[in-house]
Image 1 (cartoon, rainbow, N blue to C red):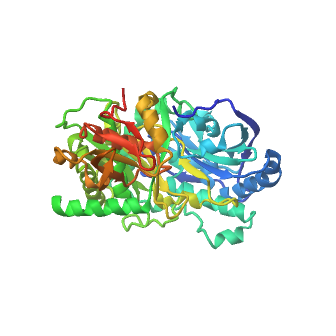
Image 2: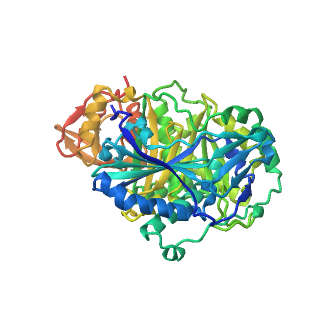
Image 3: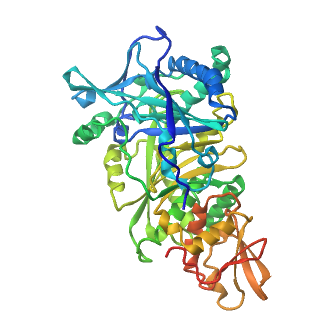
Amino acid sequence: MADVRELDSVKIIEQCEVSPPPNSLPSTILPLTFFDIPWFFCNSVQRIFFYEFPHPTQNFLQTTLPILKHSLSLSLQHFFPFASNLIVPPQLHLSHIRYLQGDSLSFTVAESTADFTLLTSHSPQDVRNWHPLIPTLPSPRLEQDDIRVMPLMAIQVTLFPNSGFSICLTFNHIAGDGKSLHHFIKFWASLCKARGDFTSVETSFSLPSHQRDKVKDPKGLKFIYFRELGHFLSKRMEFAGPVRDVITNRVRFTVLLSLEQVRKLKKWVSLKSASNYSGLLHISTFVVACSLIWVCKNRSEEKKASFSEECDELCHLVFLADCRERSEFSLSSTYFGNCLTSYNVAIKRSELVGEDGIVAAANAIGKEITNLKSDPLRKAETFISDYKEVTKPGKSVLVIAGSPKLGVYKTDFGWGKPKKCAAAHIESSRSVSLSDCRDENAGIENSLNIEEISRFTGKPWKLYTENFSSHNFIGLAFPVSGRFSTYQILPSYWGSWRRRNHCGRESLWLQPFYLQRDQSIALLYAFITYIQSSLPNLIIFSSFHNQILHTQKLNIIS
């Protein structure tokens, strides 16, 4: 069972408001663009950073907190939308972002007794562990004429005495996308590291551009999107932030894909594509990482649902791409706001979970990327309705958030790289977040969640994972004689085969490419689920102690 801590272990030390310096900028109104409007459907987004700080609370409050708040105030002078409010009148198409002098964001300082090491580990942990560290946006208020005024950001700093601290930002996606958010965070971090010396930050970071009038709308998307909001918004905007479900069966994993593993995947996909497809249209680290995760997710789902081998159900993958610096929009890389286009890839389940599922997924993703490169607003008119359709209950969909290009581990407030970064709002098994790794040479970090913890707590699973955690790899052994072709069902990209004498008999064994020590059991689970139906006489043993873990056909889920 994943670790669960007490949820009342946070003590509030201070609650205040932080605003830009007085008289530093005029009152400003920013219109919404068609890029912003779809995010009316999105719950608040949370990004959390953990930093090591082996000092007592009082030390932090006296030496660190003042410069954190001062540098935040200076940063908001340039990134003022995060201190602003979303103004939503009854006439939705008149909605806009408004900054008035004196506007501010909510800033909370808290202290936690939770285990900092657990919270920052890659091991499975209950998704509720981070909830006390996440601030909630202040409640909307009503102005005259039934105009809703909605704050756009809240920040919470949580101290773990003699261990570290976390910084969590909750914000309304209407204010800006991931690139805008991380532009702000890194600017704030650099200014904090420079102890408020703005001249040293100017040389490293460009100021944000708020020129929204440059966003052209040749397809009339703004009108189309506002028309689709209607009744939906009247219900959604009655509360301050996301109403959390009572979650009792979800665990959070972090999976690391090394550069070497990604390289092998790329090579294998390229070779397969050359022989089975008309050549891969677009291959990248992002493509192969998404393909691997998508396939593993759907293979693991087969254990809890009944799907026929020829199942024609469509499985969907949704991800986003930045449109800045494209000739169609003439927006600079520092444009502040939303500037994303959506990709929706669909494959039949039978094809996705087949032997060459990763290749099929990579080709489908690559084809969609190529199509949207030529027309980034392709199918944009139906984006909202299409998204609502594929995310209905019962639909198979995986939504990819984040990007390794955002460089989240380069956010240094003066205490070095974060110990851990994550998209804290990713709590659904239908979503996964991608980012860079703390170690620049490590590859890609994937944060995902799995439902139904009880499905992972049977004796064989515990025995397997306990041994797995202490060894470099797991071997898969079975007799060489017999129907060898049966074992060729296992695709070569899972690992490398070798012969070995095991327990007095000649055997084949496999060293998986990506099941290395300290990696998450999430992909391990999908790996075992995939092979257990193909290898009825499978024996699992550890590589160092030659210990038999489970000698029957694997039955991980009882």
